[in-house]
Length: 550
Image 1: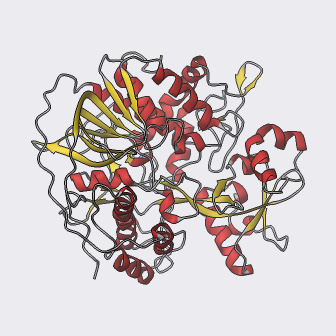
Image 2: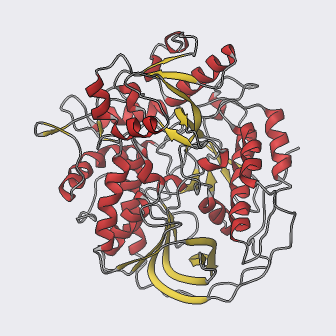
């Protein structure tokens, strides 16, 4: 029998004393989606406050290496980009969302270049890379540090926009509601002070949840806290079972995950077992350029066959200057650990990378809760379906971040009622001393290979996870939120009795047409299954009005 989902509205055991602040639009998160949403909203003349979990340059977006997908080659088109995305999504993409993504991408890349993002060029054209799952070369990039280059430009523009203010080291703890709409958030600052930020519209752009798994390509703060906030407030959470594991992550000597970009295989990198056997051609005809879920399972199978904890990504047959040119960040990081990718194969293994599910939205970022919008990895627009196509993630942040910011700005001038009082949560079980390791061990059940019995055991353990915290317990607040999101992932994985995209059940290894539907979880409601994530309102992929980033 499945354990009940969390039903609490608040995790605080007592309410702190707070100071109030009011803005037109509140943005929770300072990665590519949050920064783009802030700029888009401010372009409409509204006052915007951005809450950054850490310091402003810190985000998963800044860690993105590979690039951004856009149909810029004469032999390519948005329609082909759409087709590749739908193929990777394994039957669960929302075609309208994919059309928006692909059709807005080319103009957006030209716009970013005009703003100063130094995309690599081939003469007077963009230099386009190839990644797994793409049928054309369409990846624009800045070496192997595209995310950092894009976020730096966005940060500069945010700092130069008088209508935007930023509060760093700010942890969003609970969304505030009144009259059945979201009206802001309760915030804890790193110095222990508390703020009640009231806003006509709130954009959630807090990122994904890879750090739940321990070894990840994400930052340690990527624990899905924004999803937990939205769930407790009553938002619909969709497709949480679909977690993408990047096939090639290097474990540093310090024990952290360092992503070896998809572009390394796009440029000709090959995968071998430690005994020297190349295994991907026998596993899939696309070999190393198969979609990520296929390559991940191929690596897991190879590791199980040979009893090892890694495989080798070999670039040594490529020209040294090609390796140095395309992957300077990777070369520098590996050499710091004594590995020279020009001469040495790179030990890699699959690790948690991207969450396809999240807060369910329409094409403007609107959720089922009036006043709450979501964009980026925290959101589920349906654009990725069951498996994200490589280099569509930064693109999603930019395209849908802008749409969410513009829609949030439309709330300008709406009166913000006094928030409903938050209920007091009961004191709950103790927190494990090393809770991150404990949670990562539980989440192995929802890893690349899953089965019902293991998922049920994980869900039973998560039902005993702490559900509340005191206002002065910052680490415990984080842990409680992480536990909620972990429980949503495991619950959805147990519900879906088939294999599709990033979700692979060893006890149900086939995809079933009857499961071509989305899993919707909501507080105080039974799980729901819908054939498509249809936007509540029809939104054309043709943009209206001015460009928000200029």
